[in-house]
Length: 303
Image (cartoon, rainbow, N blue to C red):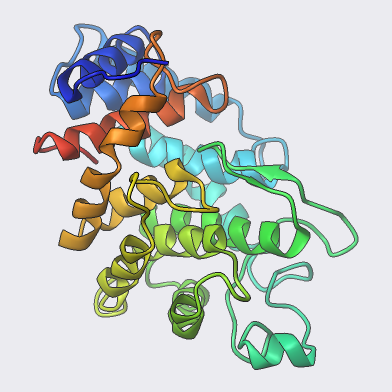
């Protein structure tokens, strides 16, 4: 680890590491730094075409939930005109998983009903797999691992909601029900960590960051609740640092930006000399860390 690296040195380490990557993360890092490489346009087109060729006729990536959802996010973030043909079948495949058997919202028992966590209060949730198929443990692209089945299904539904919102599906009734359901869990934020774990609520916040107006109105307040749980060292006790930063970077409210800046010291301590934060989700965590440090440095383009 680099123990007392400065903010600018940290940015430089991450920039050098990511600038070597012929990947989505490398492209997005160069965009955030406003340092495009000569071949970036061709690289973007090549990545989009390769990602599109890997999709099956039904639009999915091998019929697997997490890779398919992540592929939609990748295509949206790369932002090439050629991704549209591949995106539409993929969007349909993901939307078709809403309100199916195996969704987190399915079923009702007294504890769940009391927490407004059952089908009487929640709708539009995505089913990552049938109820007979276990999905946990599951690792999200940011490196966060969900090991408990219920938490995994909740988080994966929020992950899919983020993808379809990014892809412009805000007007879909089931998508709006999912957004409204997450906003209806406001009491869970006030009772931080009692029924829904902090990392579950962080995945919800990340999805809600892309909610349309006027539904998005409460989102800055939810980000402020997360910011208030930040420890003095800049981390979040019992929560994944990179997942929290990724969500706050998406919200971009004043409270969210302040919390991201407060996390800079712990990021700089965790940063390794090779410009990464370790082998887990190596490029993705480096990109999140770079965006956070750019925010801390007051530069535009941190997201």
